[in-house]
Image 1: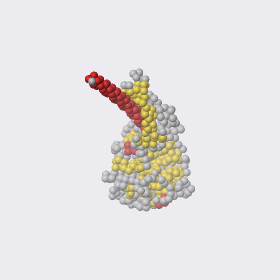
Image 2 (image 1 turned 90 degrees about the vertical axis):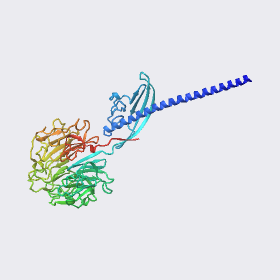
Image 3 (image 1 turned 30 degrees about the horizontal axis):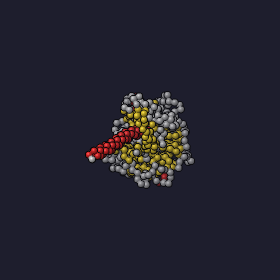
Image 4 (image 1 turned 30 degrees about the vertical axis):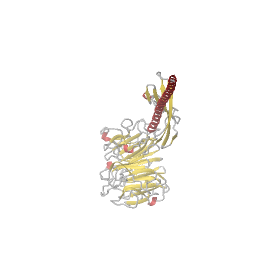
Length: 587
């Protein structure tokens, strides 16, 4: 029995030992399997992170290339995919230090990004393949773990489409909203704030409401709210916007320039109001303004309102204040024919007592004419009668753009008179005041005035096929944008008006009658960024480049440049207030 008992115990021990060994073996297998699974999860996680790096690379390439795909199978690309070491065209090895996203011992990760799955003006759907590679000591891949990563990238909401400078303020359209900064005593910023109470000097600072940083122009229900904003101009102390065929104005209204039937020293609106009267029920296609006057084109006809004492409303009489839109006069010999069709109004004009327009390919101007700024080969002393009806500018055909600026002509202030420039047949022409060289006629030199248009001298080395796309003028300077994207300026350089980074005194009398190219490269417009639009203020110039960034130069005493300082900019300086935001991921 004892042996039996011992035999029974031995059997039990054998059975128990076998069971324990089985359990231990199973536990080992589980542990091993868990380890393997854990390692594999780690490798997949690394692959996913590599894929996300690929989508980030695609995002960066879209950002620096104006939202355009530059790799893969699109026009202008070579069918190459993005990799850690490629440039934005997919050319591998351009960034040799980035051959792998991560490389540690026998583990390395990479990504490839092919064509975008979906792409429109505001969204891109990008896919990237991330890989974790296990390699031997010679770099041979032993095993790969692959993950596909998708991201939706949204384009920035705030993209500058236009900027405009008035007296002591600047405004810009950013993704269908208007933002302004500068002086605001009479609501020039349109943000619902103002103080008024300063008859005769609307520009005087009012620290409680002025703003050195951009403020958003109010969008009221039934006014600008929900509407597409198409254009903007800033004049002396008021601004107007064009939105879906309607005009909305804000700011000072001393002479009826807001077009709401009211006027007076303290009249103003610190929010946009719709201009109605003769424009009610009509579709407006163009707007412009000068000093205390506003104009619009509807149905091919020109309407103006505001101060008319010096003929700026173009209505054919001496009515000082027109608080409602009124048709300009036509049918006058040498002026607009009754059957005219107007297509554009002059830009700039913050302080001048003139206005110009384009109709049937010809240029027409009206207002003061003391230095021949009407351009029809006539001029008179400041005390003589202004031109109260639009008159045709001599010698110009196929006019595509016109700009004018200056000051109200007063005795003893000849240097501050008005000049006009236009783009016609691919060339720039200027007339009026030329004392600062703003007419750009190096072959003639500095002249007091010119009553007919003269072609601006083309810069040396400029291709004959490179035509003038746009002209913009300030009070003492002028600029032109070429089809190639190059910008040239001429006239005074007192505050850096020419944008060429020339030190004070670098030019004789701080002026140039010869067009000079604005600075491109370090310290100026970034090399490789093509300029697509041009604007000017009284003492400034501004350019918008392909990626939506704006650069301005010139006077900055009230922070008009938008770089957060009050330091004059002698070279193009990015207007940070008009800078687009970066692209955004939606995870």
